[in-house]
Image 1 (cartoon, one colour):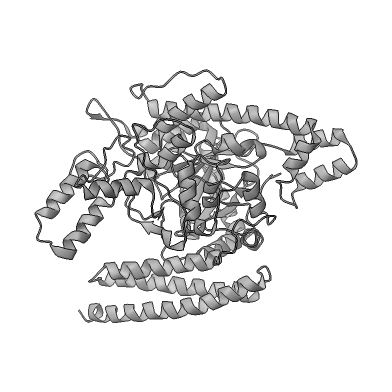
Image 2 (tube, helix red, strand yellow):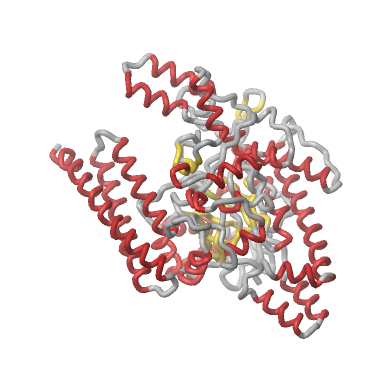
Length: 602
């Protein structure tokens, strides 16, 4: 029995690194980023002291230190969560007031809540105890790997084998931990990493058909799910959940789709879910048999979840019912909930005061992918001041995004002093001048050290020093956060999700589908403006993008015209907005047609 219909997805490097410690005992699932083993080691020391647990540091010089640090941190989180959960169960069994307070957090339709209410009415304490023992369980302590952040590592000048790459070591750290939970694979495909997963028994079913460790695949379209799902199935690995995230209307890095919108993507998943499960199971069963592994008698559970841009109970309910989802991720709004995430007061205040114009897609990430941001983030301000003082680039201390080999044999980071000096010297020796030079210079120096920046808020929230990381905070909120106006308690946010409170105030917030559509229109307009002389291939890509957007707008017109799950106010606003966006789409298409003519005549 699932306790809640929402989960807290990974946010940044450190914002959710200890979220399970804060909320898992309440039945709320969340995900820990495995990017930063240095931060994980510091957090392990912090919690060892706080909970009076033994601690022995793992030096960076130890063999396989990254994987060992991650395993050790996940093990201590698991220990603490289990301890807190046992204490919490004893508390609500022993005190009816505490039990009622907890029940007030649950969805009104929750079977756990309904059964407990019935038992309380009958004054049957034995039933209450048995219900809690049977149905209440801690939220899942999931982990997240950005598969492309798989930096090669060296020792004594020699490159280490691939299993010591960053993502590989993080995977091994999770696989060797005591957790029975899921690993979320995000940010694209890494075939070598997927093959490496075959080495760990916990990802295969036991004789009862259960996997101790499960795989969640974050995808942006149905085709990707089929392709990657088959790759895993052929290895005897099962995707237990497809997690669909909006390409742009999300937090963190934004991986824009080719104009495919969240609603139509979820519709395709929902309509083909049974077929996908059956198709993958046939491949999966054969692979397990070939490996002489236990074969489940039937296809294991394959969940469908979504996240990105949700802000109201109405949206939550619509997605759950329309697409038969198992859970929905609420991310950025929880950045205003220090009871759930690790974030400092100054950053909370910045986020709470931010308006629509303050949230934007930036180019600060050295990964080379657009990055959701807010104006005034202290790391960006610090970096801009350094550029103004002719000191561009950062000291590359953590080195997690050393991915560029443009000028060096070993990869370096685009935000580093080393890389930016090379690029600026190259620019100074070019024939660029005036506005063209300024744009090129800005493109180089805008890159910021998010490895350090995304962990500072976590350290500050726990009163830990940031001498090595610096004071500046990087933050990666989704644009949806512009409509939430203040810091909230955990109970307030949960009640907001379930329609029992309103944290939006009187803000004029667009429906999540309309917000996403506007971002996709903005995205292609900006891209078309940035490329002065597009070739035929680029123009073809833009035409496909616009065609997919048109299909998405037609779909949204139907769901707002004929579905009964939207309020009259939301329906009228959405239809009106769609009319305006259709006009905007038409103008973009006409502009593209004019660009196409010279290319086609060549």
